[in-house]
Amino acid sequence: MDHKYQSKWLDLSRREQVLIVLCICLGLGYFVYSGVIEPNYRRYYTLQEQLPQKAQTYVWMKDQVRGIQSLLNQSKDKEMNKAKNEAKEVSSAQAPSLVSTLENSIKQIGLSEEVKRIRPQNSGEVKIWFSDVKFNQWVSWLDQLRRRKIEAISSRVERSENGLTNIQVSLNLPGSTGNNSGL
Image (cartoon, rainbow, N blue to C red; front, side, top):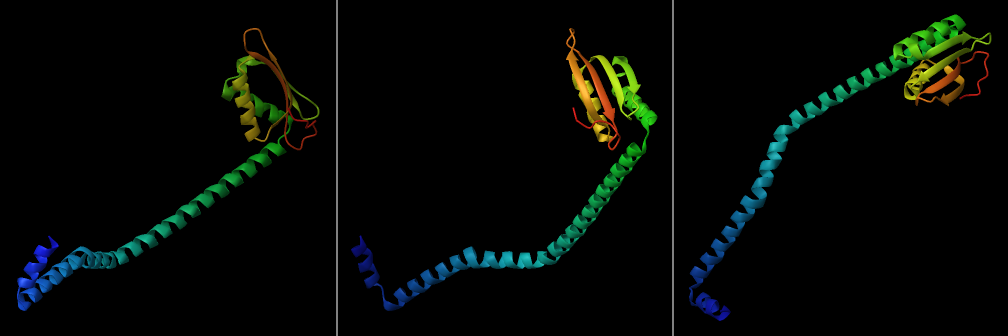
């Protein structure tokens, strides 16, 4: 087959051969231009037009990030100050106010019925006896106290026959003169 095309090529005049080669080169040039060069130029000019808008959006976003970071820092500062103030309030409290704080927290979490006895000690501790309490509810109450900077010094937990628990716990404020041996 190659021989067939070669003979046809040779049968053409020099002028026709030049025209065919020229048309092939122009066709390839057109495809290269329209498929590669022109789309890249179009994309380049589109990006050039969008650049000021994108730069403005970038500046706006950076300003928003700074504003959000400022608000977060203010929020963290407020939370830290609130925690410090609560710690000061709790540490400056005396045994009677500790008892009232404990009574209020017991009412809030719904353990009033289970409390059998609350007894303040001379050392600043407060002992509380619970009867037939749900263990998870009691642990939630302890966690609430921990957030208020009230420490559980000791506890005794016994399972009762009905699947609930009987608990005796000693509580204290940090820095008070109690035995800080933990649970």
